[in-house]
Image 1 (cartoon, each protein chain N blue to C red):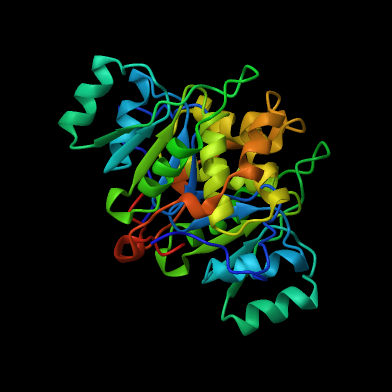
Image 2 (spheres, chains in turn green, purple):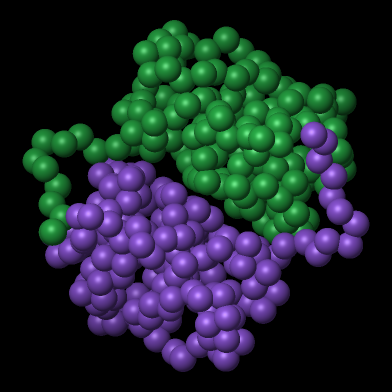
Length: 173
Length: 173
């Protein structure tokens, strides 16, 4: 068959910094109203947010209407000295990502750069990526605002603190 | 269960500019020898290369040993004036990407920026992404070497020239 765009079909507006991480896991910035039709097309089963604030009603309603389960692991950014990303929250969030029954899942923070970058960096560590590869990817999304503290967090993160359910682990683990 | 890294397991070195495009489609830079263990883990069914040069023996052997089908659509870069990316080759390459029997597939050129970026940009157009979203993604991989000509190529590309097999189209089409 030949492709053609049906006239009048609205175009998809993709969240900033959107990408696939591995099969079943997406990442990006905080979703805006204009991104919802795109998110709907992904047929998400869950969303994992790393912002501590309450989410806007328009999002909560969208998740409810589309049977999307919301996981919230509020984490402060690694911005100030002495404001550390809590290791235990990242470990819990990883447990969700390693559970294929929650896939497809969309992970976001505010910009999809730092907190999301830390979480995905730790996921890459679990996938046995070299630190060079991990930090290349981290900077790919965070530049020109990459943070040394985030990269250090990933390097020092102890993956033995992460629990997962053997019967529901994804194929890529 | 708890995660732990088996001692002595070698780490994966990921190709530069590596990412998932959509389920079943990966992109990145020209694979190096050190990336082969990582590529092997992806259990690729095919590789689509956009470089016109003959591939090194080490790659050809690796593809043969792992039953990876190689598609080569040699395309010159959009570097010089009057050296255009041939639309028909991009259309043929898209036909391969839209055939789920070739998935998982890894697409690469030299840097994974320009030729790969043009091809994936056209794929996004087929997926009905807005031009803003497409160019954001293009620049994400090409910056700081993004080319206006590439973005113009994507904008002007005529998706009605792309054929696909209805029975083998991927779920995301």
